[in-house]
Length: 507
Picture 1: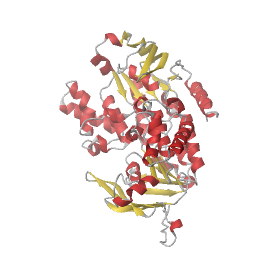
Picture 2: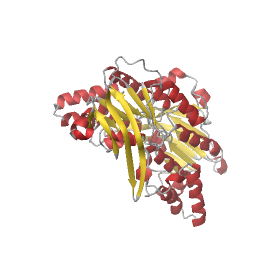
Picture 3: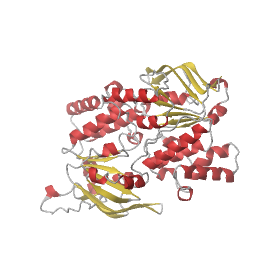
Picture 4: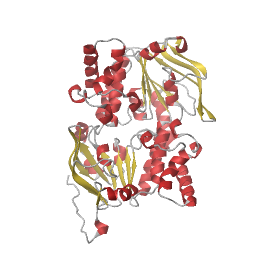
């Protein structure tokens, strides 16, 4: 499809594109991450940007406000090149960028102060600033957490705060890098409705992995291997389903079959667990007597809105947190009576924020780390790391020597998952495992979950992605305000949640 090639005349500034990307090349560590990218975005356009993990989406959008600079070519915002330092202040007031990981842009202690921070830096009048903060808190349903520390929020709550803080500054160009990746369905729907309402008034670039989100835009750009490969109206770009599957855009939503083996006894069990979070002088009961069980050879999905207590419960399963009351049992034994090292060998946990798990210099070293600590030889550790990475769609030869910090968020998630899978734990707890993954990554994850389940492992999947939960779950635990009951009626339970959250029946 032809790319937009309109060039503005100097005598007609109103026709100048807001964003003008010209033969953009970006190289890092000897790798070309962007390869001759050229396109423009006009004022008032609502553009969606899609592409598989590692295709260059985040690298591209970080050029728009000068966080990254071109190796070759240029990026102009309102006609001004980002490579010229004298234009950066104006450019950064024009471009509001919401990062894929919201924690990367949190600077203030409390939610209220975080939203006010950008306005203070722009020297807004105090009364106007207070009114704008109130409007943002209400619009993004954050009033109840206004005094909470930003570090104590769930991933989804942090994401809403990050979007609210950038929205409050009223940028001409709003760039959102996968802003719904950690949001529950109602919060995502509200954000998408807000973007719809801003269409035409503001220029929007929405990076997403979800086709249903991209359809709402007026234009869709698809990237692959650092290049723009498709650009046009969403209905045209999305028409070729086979091509989109090849590119890793469309997901094969295959429901797992019945478990090959079932166990009447739970490998992992939570009994009447309560947890109290202390946020400075404030205390909040996050879990209020939750009980759950994960038998061997089955998958338990824990679902619920952001801030409902899902991740808090998951962190109890390998003793990162201890219950205020209640008990966590592993194969019938209270985990508090077991050596901590034994618990964590048997219960593997991937975090919602995967960067917290990646600490070695290379991908190969990171994945092999746990095996080496258990005394496995270097050769065997490396071989098992290679096998696990390959199974998750990360060719070992290509990724082994790369630094984890240089990977895309989706690639980082797969590396973190590999580091847990390679240990072959009896129980596997995955916190938001599909966040940031492209379609190929989700397909590989589903296949891995099925293989582990059929091999007799117990799996716990914490997710706001109800479609994914429907694919893999044998049991489901809906958590609301720290409470919930496990159900074997997966389809009915999830359909009921979708209807309750959206007001629409599940398709």
